[in-house]
Image 1 (cartoon, one colour):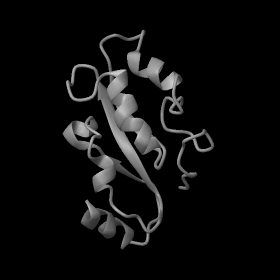
Image 2 (cartoon, rainbow, N blue to C red):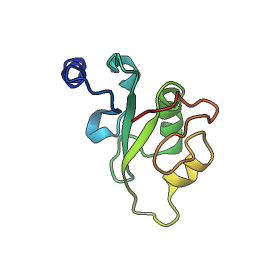
Image 3 (cartoon, helix red, strand yellow):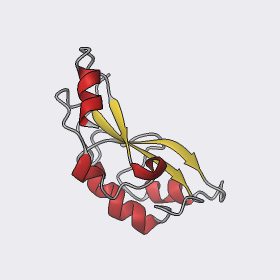
Image 4 (cartoon, one colour):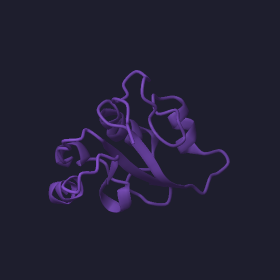
Amino acid sequence: MQDDLNAVRATGTTNVVMVGAEQFANDASDWLANVPTDPAGQLAMSFHVYDFNAICVTASCWSGELLPIAAKYPIISGEIGESDAPASSTHAWRGRTPMASPTWLEPGIPGAAGTLRS
C-alpha cells in the first residue's frame, strides 16, 4: 500500500487518498497497523458497510474498530448496503458517535482528525 501511495504522490498531487479496509473495505481490525505514511497528510479511511457481510456489522464492532481510527483519520463510508433500511442500524450508530455525518467524519468534531483539503 505504501508503494501505491508513493506512486500517487510522485505525480505531485496532494489530493485526499482513500485507503480501504480489508475484506471489501469492511474489516478495519488491522487498518491502523498498516496505514501508509502520507507526506501530504491527506489520508482518509474508506469503509464499506453491508449488514449481510459477516465481518463488521454490529455497533460493538464499529465502536471497537472505527472509533480509534476516527480519532486519527477521517472515515468515508464509500458504500452502505443494509437490508433493514429505513431503520438503518449503521446510521443510528453513527448518530450516537463523532461520526454523525452520513458521508465522512466532519473536522472539528471531538475525536475527529484534522481538516481535509482538496
